[in-house]
Length: 116
Length: 110
Image 1 (cartoon, helix red, strand yellow):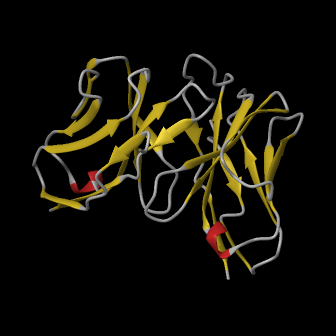
Image 2 (image 1 turned 90 degrees about the vertical axis):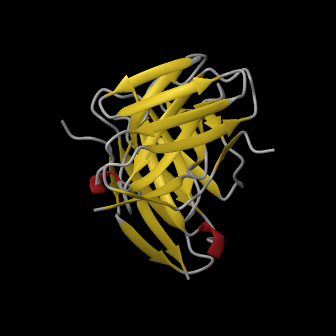
């Protein structure tokens, strides 16, 4: 079975540009979460989507937005890129919404974004 | 205070050594604790997952949670060069997301 897939693998942008990152969850998984991992740090939560609705948001500016499609794939959009947005962007899928009990999240390989 | 704190290392050990990786967490209400392994330029993969306190063993790996001291540990026995990676502890805070430590980079020397 295919795991979580993300595209593109690498991306180079300049300050002020916009970027769209894509994620396909494991088949049958309805929940997608996005994380940002700056070099030398652990991943930081950006968003969770379940059944096409935003169900959780981390402490990121409004320049970050996301959506989930009817097939449960997801896009992360970042506007007005800053140098500090350079990071590995990870997508994780799980079969259930993260609520009171934890449901295992499976991570994709990530998209490495470099902002020049 | 960060919710999860982890010594970034790096930690270098000879092949066959026992490795101890540790994290502390801030909130005694946290119940779910995970250890992820992340190879260079890859996504994290779940190694161990424990609920509440106690030990959990899986092959060469043992995860331990001490709720009285808010301390979580991962032990690797008979370490191998293929264990060289960054190890991330994480907890689920109930707010839809995992909260990770900063990761400890481990190098196992042949």
